[in-house]
Image 1: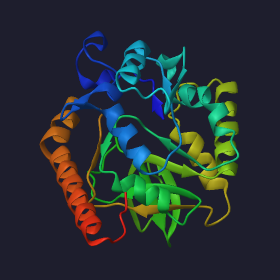
Image 2: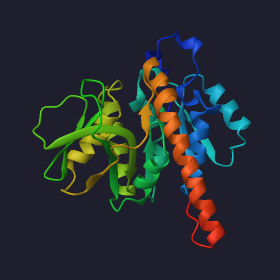
Image 3: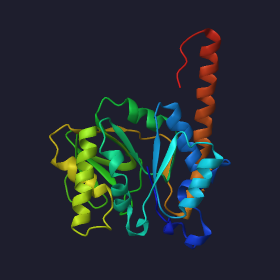
Image 4: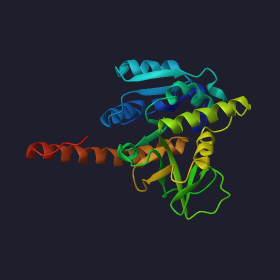
Length: 264
């Protein structure tokens, strides 16, 4: 999980705001949301690529008593860009099992992770068609059912496109290829490229059907980039998440009382 950035677009001077993964909603940090959701979805370990005010993140991990689940990797060059943080996580990406690669600055309902983990596709992105077009969102463009572009700026024909959530399921092979592409970028001095470019290169050079997507349009989530995103998260996204959690809890209670299956 990428959690090293400064979050300079939040509007206040960096020294005045915490790392975005420590922003609090309903009394919980984003980090706590991540931990609770990933544990419920059967994830074994959360590895955080940290940088800006990493000591604060370490203290939150201790406060949550999550050392048995969360491990951190410090990127000393975190100010250079998130592709450098991705490279700091290279040992985790050079793996023998599938991995989830996630942006840390997202508030979301756990059904997004459920869709990603349970997807039949080995390499999967999450796509939301309900977004405001512009230069800011990273877009996933689809033609004839295949992903044909993955970046902010578009120059291809497509049937439809959606915003990327910033969550990816990668096979061990794909993760290794992304790592190798990241290393190439750094050797070329392209340290300020967005990390998505390395994924894009692997995606577009892979055989047809190697990468796919799950359409999560209508589900509750938001990326936290700007102060307005924090306001939207509190006013719109968080209430929807809390309502969904209450509904899931009610269903589990009913199933338990009836002696039926209990799903996380």
